Length: 71
Image 1 (cartoon, rainbow, N blue to C red):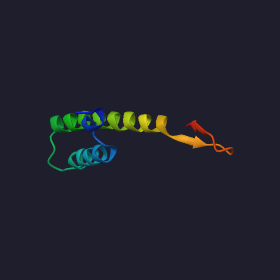
Image 2: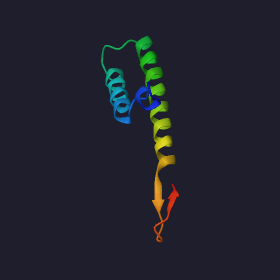
Image 3: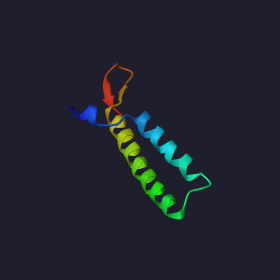
Image 4: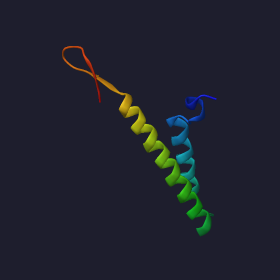
């Protein structure tokens, strides 16, 4: 499987993170479950940040002469 296929896309990561946040906000969450959800959320947040960093490195800017430069 190609590396891109293994990676989750940013939208999927954000959906999973949103789900974790919703679960954390639930009324029937135990303290232990809260810690597990928090840990899961932090790992997802790290993956989101890494994915965004990779995308930022690939973004190119065109200058006034039409030459491409990395962002």
